[in-house]
Amino acid sequence: GRNRFLGEAHVPLRDVLASPHLAASFNAPLLDAKRQSTGASLILQVSYLPPPGAAPFFAPPAPAEPNPTPVELDTITDTAGEEEGEDHLGTGDEAEPSAGPAATDQPSLPKKPPLHSAHGTKRRRSTSRKLLSNKPQDFQIRVRIIEGRQLPGVNIKPVVKVTAAGQTKRTRIRKGNGPHFDETFFFNIIESPMELFDEPIFITVIDSRSLRTDSVIGEFRMDIGTIYAEPKHCFLRKWLLLSDPEDFSAGAKGYLKVSLYALGPGDEVPMEKKEGAEDKEDIEGNILRPTGVCLRGAHFSLKIYRAEDLPQMDDAILDGVRQIFGFESNKKNLVDPFVEVTFAGRTLFSKVLEKTANPQWNQSITLPAMFPSMCEKMRIRVMDWDRVTHNDVVGTSHLCMSRISAPGGELEVDDGLGFLPTFGPCFINFYGSPREFTGFPDPYEELNMGKGEGVAYRGRLLVELETKLVDHVEQKVEDIPADDILLVEKYLRRRKFFLSAAFYSATMLQDVDDAIQFEVSIGNYGNKFDSTCLPLASTTQFSRAVFDGCHYYYLPW
Image: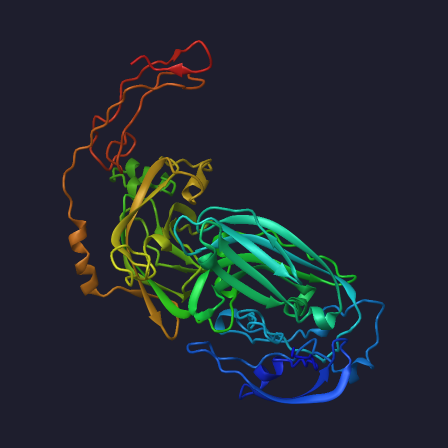
């Protein structure tokens, strides 16, 4: 005949993870379908075996909302449908997010996959254990999907599916491996805290173009109770590390930036702070990752050899005094350069070399990170040091990690071939505002910061990037060995080239009053305003524009 339901029991897995041996014994009462005690009980021995390569566990905090037994429910006082606020959370010391994973502190329901722990979040001390009410209350779950990064696949069209308390909602379909969604979903629920806080939230990224069998790109799961246990009952602008729901050991499957809210009766919605500059965000310390997904420590070693053709950045008053007394002008060396390297919210600097437009640093900057890293760009910026005023930006460039690395299985040559981020030794060109120095504020200074397309060449930098997986990460700045400097000399040979450009027409010009001339330059060669190179025939003749009778002007070539 059919199997007959005898009862069920819930056990808090927090107690298992709180044990030094990751094991605990339970004498759980058996409940019927109406959550009433049947008089029977189950004696269980539960243990947890971490998957190979998983990060070690730290002792989790005492649970803020343990599952009460039926006997305990008689002692609960219903506070007019209101839940305790963040007063049940301690304000103890906070651990450094990147120092190690935090504890896994959420329960899971029977016959459900293990839920993800919030590794990398701040650990808290709970002042006391407070019991959960078993009476239905109004709750609202909010999930804001902001953006994704490094989603695996080629020509994908990702869509995010969010499931909470039996309700499922989807975002619009986007394109690419770094889509922007910025969509918010609301789940209104009437449920008791005792049952609701054990319910998981599933956030799944799906490729809408794939077949149903392999459409899942990655997934993240978290208990509603874990969100409610946070200060103000929310996670704001957190990065979720997606994983294969069937195999956590398969590694990262991309990242998704979200805000999660679990709001009870009387809770105010916290305001999200306006996000600062992307390069200043501590991304490594802002990641929630599931148990079993292991990130390796990595060193990004950027060797900075030399720079060439940097523009004048300082006032030439002292240089003018030198000319009055008959000394040679040295305007081209009126710059005190140093290099600023930023990756994953960390910034390191090279030494400052004064009064040189062609500096030679020969330094290696080592930036620590967790690999695979969700940070796509490493920012390299040449700065001009000023003793009195603020430092000026000479030029900015970025190294895109996805373009200088490849995971295994995505290369057509060999399915098992892949390599860590590697670049150079090679020159990086800087483009920004016009090179001509003035004592007035530069109206195009944002171009030097990498915002927009630069209109003038501002020098180049010889660098080399190497990535190594390590057990212990550290950041440092050190000199490059002399042997390594000799190896890059072969990349500094110069040869003569000839550049030819032909102009056929110039149309749709607006508001033209004076004669127009076009200039062709490569680097400083061909730039009429630069004195470091010999003058060349690199400009067209001056021509006055002719009105076309409608809205624009054209040149009568």
